[in-house]
Every structure is written in C-alpha cells, then in structure tokens.
Amino acid sequence: MTEDDARAWVRDRYGVSRETLLAAFVSRLREEAGRQNLIAPSTLEQIWTRHIVDSAQLLGAAPDKGLWLDIGSGAGLPGMVIAMLRDEPIELVEPRKLRTDFLARAATELELSNVAIHTARIERTAGPAAVISARAVASLDALFRIAAHRSTSSTVWVLPKGRNAQSEVEEARRNWHGSFHVEPSITAPDSLIVVAREVRPR
Image (cartoon, rainbow, N blue to C red; front, side):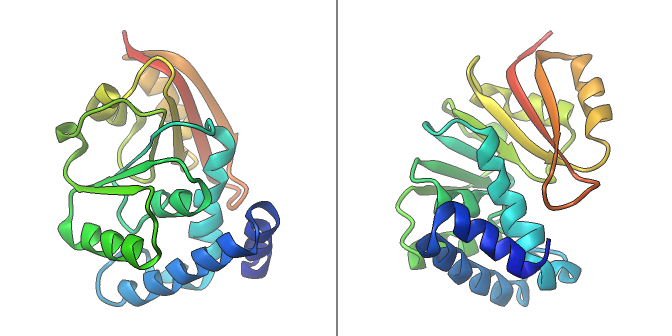
C-alpha cells in the first residue's frame, strides 16, 4: 500500500472531510515529531500507511457505540485517528505529560469534542469501556492485568500486534479466559491484530 493508496482508502470509507481532518493531524504530528520522539523517524515517509490506516483499520473489529479507551496513546495512534473517524466518546490515557500536552493541543485545534485525555497510568483510571485498544504497550497478559478493571463481559479488546501475536495469545490463555481471534493487518504482512472478547481471569 502506497501513501496515495492509504489516503484513498481513508477517503473511500470515511469521506473527504474526515481525510482532510486526518491530514491536519498528520501535519501536526510531523511537526511535533521534530520536538519529541513520537514515531520512528524511519516511518515519517509512510505516515499514512504505517500509522493512519494502521490505526483506522481497527474500527472494523469494534462495535459502533460506547466509550473507546486507548491505553498508552503516545502520538495519538490509534486514539486520535479513531476520534476523527468515529463520533462516539474516546478516552486517551498516556502517562507522559509532553505527549498528553501534544494530544490536548491537537484535539483543541482540530475541534474534537469527543476526546478526553488523561495524563495517568491506566491502573489509576476507572470506568467501563466498550472498546479497549493499545498499540505497542505491553504483552497481552500484562495488558489484561493492568487494564482488566476497565473492561466488562461485553468489552471488545482490539490490539495491534507484531508477528508474535499468536504466541502472546497462547501465553495469555494461561491466566485468562476469553475468546481470542487473530487477524492480519492490511498495512503490513508481518503485523497481526488480536481481537479479544469476554476476557476474565482464570
């Protein structure tokens, strides 16, 4: 998928206005990446493919309604992208203040009224979420341990993973019940997405 393909993918599914909104975020992300280490410099030239579409594809595995919780939001991936493509509320939790300052500034400038941003560790937050996402935060087992208090029996976990996704699922099964499905990412052949439901401790 080229950068033009990625933009067309977004435009075809979500319309020109949302593509334009995402483009405004991309320009802010590029600018901020010069000030703090938000994304790998090697991915700046593939930002639509590696980050925008990679985040947006998660919507396909999530319910349409309810609070979306994004853990370790960092550069706003996938949280800010989801917020621009989905009108339901989204909560971004990130412990590093420099990053939450950037996210809050971007949310204000882009007039995203559905976003709540918290400078905190996920363990110190509360409340049920319909969807939970986390990109490059922790192993499945560790993630369930620190965030299970935010889930209910109907919560859908949508978790981008690398090629070791299946082994992470097998490890998590030792300590957690649930329905675990692994599907391929559309942006990278060696990336996988774990979709988990009814997650609860053994």
